[in-house]
Image (cartoon, rainbow, N blue to C red):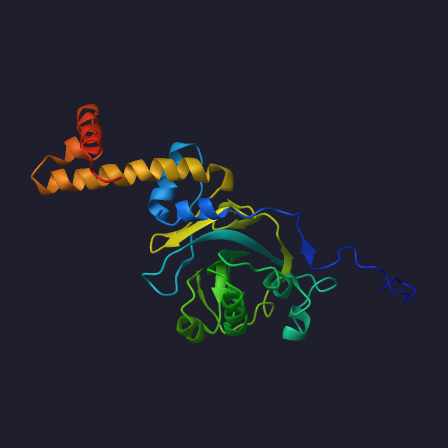
Length: 261
């Protein structure tokens, strides 16, 4: 309100939606499925991407894995003249949290920036259920979730920093924007990037680097099979992990002899 009592136009119209982006194609998605987060992180490091690991979130159900395309959601600090969680879900349903749910496509992994908040339950049972029904593959939250028991029953893979009884905007954050770059656990995630998450944690793979990561990973996985075989036969660790120039030549001969790639 102005000093005279006249209504003013809010300086920001919520929710904010970012620019159009593209999901990986089916071939790229299929090629990424065999990659684990530790291998993806190592291969990205080798090509110069130093921070791909999403530090903090852990699996709600150990043993689960997901590989998918990042669908992003950004929480921001509340400021009562713009965004407040006082009215609970009646306000939240007009925010980015509800809006992003209508854009979900099969294979998407929802990646949520929440600053590691211990008090904002960014996703609960109903939204997780809707996300899963639309084909969502998994959720990575740099913060908390609620309704953990019901989400476990759904079986949808979720990585979060913990649980809370709070709803999403009950504390200091508010669902602000979607389809925008987000910062999660110290890593940058752009819409359409690959998310690889398992018991080692989530890793963000830039979409443009996915083919290079896949090729390097295939070679790495193959020579690890070779190395395990040689170690089981009594070979020295230092000769076969990692391969030396001599054992790399032996590995190439092993491949040429018809060992499956």
